[in-house]
Image (tube, rainbow, N blue to C red; front, side):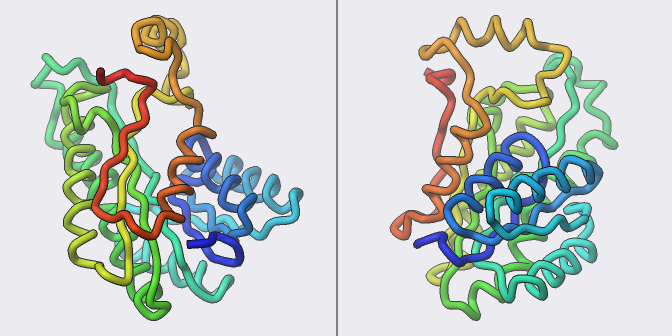
Length: 246
């Protein structure tokens, strides 16, 4: 599906992978609703970058863990641009907790991560589905993680939440077919602000993967846009990790 003159909603679109996806979508001719929950300055800057290059974009605030806010965000984006053709479910959070420290994985941590990482993606998909069905076409990409494939990651609840994202992708692909395609990307380590203060750890990791580096947000964005365009794929989890899981 050609992205030109289409409308995309990117959650967590102001920073990292979300910003890269928003900019790449605009470069391919899509109008972009850049969602943020707290990073208003970053979201506004992403919008300015898109507009400066001749694209169309707005910043829309919503906590994706709250269904009411999600529905209001979708309504605002659709009112501005006329519809929504694509959704990139990128917004995610984590807590850095050693896997062996089970006591630190409190009920609060589980609820917080599942509310954003899993329920938030479902809320967004549910809210945009009627618009896409009305158009008789649409595509969703959920940003998972290799943590959901390997069980390792920044914390045990994070890894499990990303495994749930992969499961959600398959279930939504079944529920929303044939009009709406749903796929997921499972990145390995990506050079984003999540590594702030742990740059040496990222450098050490880079030396231990096959390509001897970690992915950039721009590289993840290219894959996400390709999945949005690819009309013969649904229900797939595509790994992009520089060989980290081999």
